[in-house]
Amino acid sequence: MDPFTKPHGEVLTDSVKPSEETQEEMIIRLIKENASNIEIYRTGQRYYDNHPDIIDEQKPTDHEGNFDPLKPDWRFDHNPHANLVDQKVGYIAGESPNYQHKDETVMATIEKHLDYDFDDDLNDILTAASNKGVEWVHPYVDEEGDFKMLEIPAEQIIPIWQDRKQRVLNAVIRHYTVRNEYRVEYWTADDVTYYLYVDSGLELAWYHGMNEDNPTTHLDGESWGRVPFIPFKNNSDSTSDIWRYKTFIDAMNRRSSDTQNMFDESTELIYILKGYEGTDLSEFMKNLKYYKAINVDSEGGVETIRVEVPVTSSNEWLDKLRGYIYDYGRGVDFNRNELGNSPSGIALRFLYTGLDLKAKQLARKTIPAIKQLLWFIFEYEGIDSNLAEEVDVTFNYNRMVNEKEQSEIASTSQSYLSEETVLTHHPWVDDVEKEKERKDTEGIVMGGEGDGPEPE
Image (cartoon, rainbow, N blue to C red; front, side, top):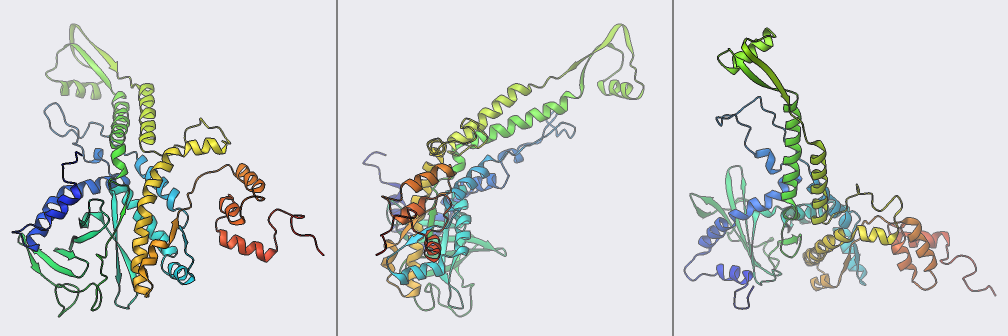
């Protein structure tokens, strides 16, 4: 981008404040402009759900272009995309994130709200973000007065950003269909306006209750002071992982399907007729099937050709495509045997290089999203919401390790590293705090016998 071109974020900011456009006209325009993005969001999700492009390709036809039900039509849907996404999400969120803060009240609040249910929700959110490029979370307070959060599909959200870095929201348009009603909501930091999209226009409509103001506050008589929507981005560009290797998956599906189609067709012989006295080919096949004989002239005869399937070359190309997918998808292909049966720590770190790069991109976007969520939680609990920025959020990457090597390193490091550091990196320790409690209970001394002070 040259320095004289207006950044895309500023273009969006300008687009929401035209001089001769009402709020409703702006919303309709942005919904129409966003229509092309919806299919982009859905593509990664389709492939994750075993619905690649080959499923919707045209049915096989005969020489006249008509559907031919007798022609083999295999459509294999290899799904390395789901493997890569699940591998990345499991790698970063397979274990619960760690939260650290010096204030015990803050830690108790985090433990109350970001529990095992949130860990399960986070797995789903990051999976959707990997498929679509971004997924949204909406914090709210339910009718019983409890703090809740709702995952909102990216297809329903149109963000209006305040800055080109896309860190502060000016507003959010949410649009979705419920029981044939096309609902549209316009959220700002101060209120929310509810509409129904009717006859190509917007009409004010309150569909969450009766006798309510519209626009209305986020909560019962008050608002958050922020737009209550949080983006969980896959990367800086908010793009799906699928676009790194979609063409290779399509090629793999087509090659394997065509190979199976050739196998089916190769079971039938191709007949070469010489001096055949019948009128058409259908009569020839009928005579061959029922009478096991055909009429030819004195110089006639029948020869056959069997189709040979290029299995070896097809398998070699499929292996190449699989390699491309894992290379460009930055995943770990455990089917490769270059590392042997018991790879060293250095070899394993090399194996995980691509996955580390991809996962850390997701982590860099997820950590600020979690801190935004903590801001709303602290506001709800009456805690200083600015403390959310001080919370240290880290992930326990679920990397395969050489346990013997890691244990030996931990054992030899006890004399010059803290107990917490040693326990954090020990392959058998999942929860450092619980392990420290067990050690205190059992009276275990780090470093073994003889390292403590001599008794008086």
